[in-house]
Image (cartoon, rainbow, N blue to C red):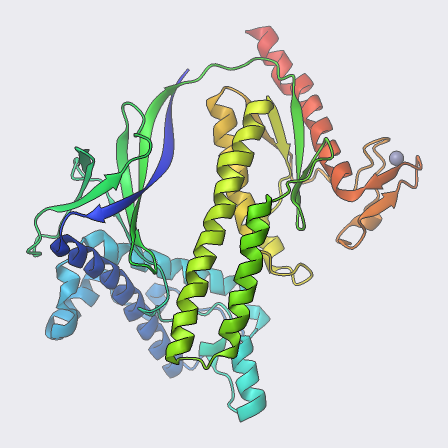
Length: 429
Ligand SMILES: [Zn+2]
């Protein structure tokens, strides 16, 4: 079967001239400026309304939020931000979508009326009452400092292309920069017949550029037929995952070493006076190390672990859990791993499906944690009780490890799935 496959490729890239670099920085700036214009309008609106803590934010329409082009027009009268016209139009449009996302995310937790820690501290020590601006998740101004800068642009009639290892991006009509090129450091080429859909340019805190190129390409996929090797994969807060063979995903040694160093540098940062030169210097060290740790972790998970698993097994069965809900549950400590598992799952799915193998997500009502993998008794006492790591089945007496038992149930689901869903199809064919 010939299928159209989407995939992203990330390359380190260097702008072909100083002029291009300036243009890219302007695009980042426009994205940030457009976002901040939305935030400023929102704050202004909420102050006038006035806003009741706990309420959801109104829609853009209800607020009478100006359109992106209206914001651009306003900016012309103010010379400082006329550059909104000099950059890629997509940079500003993306900003509006990001703002909308931030609003939606806030509305989900608005009723919790949670303030940021710093605001509560200020209230305690200085007696300053927190306002809606201090609410957790409230869209806030993006600052130029400290954050990663980026913008995304989309291919229209082939205005994004690669020639001789140089990636060409669209410019803006009014910009004096006509050719926007970035030299790519291609460690692996794009697949045959690739069509570029969009490109995200990012600049890290070191001022280095990366481009993430999203492409679609045709791929021949042949089903492997009946899966022989089936693996259940249970998400674990402490071990990242536990599989049905009792194996845990153990981070390699080099990763733990880096993590220890990061903790040390963060401690130094916490002792310095916020905003001072020494603080700023240390902040850079921490931010670079954070980047490095995140990259190492991601690389290990995706390119080593997910790759190995999807090569070794014919079918991988995972829970149908809402990772975002877990991240918001206060009983779980904020755990960076939560962000990674979604990507990990997605990567395994692609890797398996491209080989004609199976990725199975169990239905939401399948209680992988509560079922006894020996006798199928459902132990509802475990529901929501994350503290219990081991238990004895009240029905058959089996002694079970919470995570391994869950992974085993997932594997058993995969075996049933093979019998009920895959076998009949193969017999018919
Ligand atoms: Zn049992």
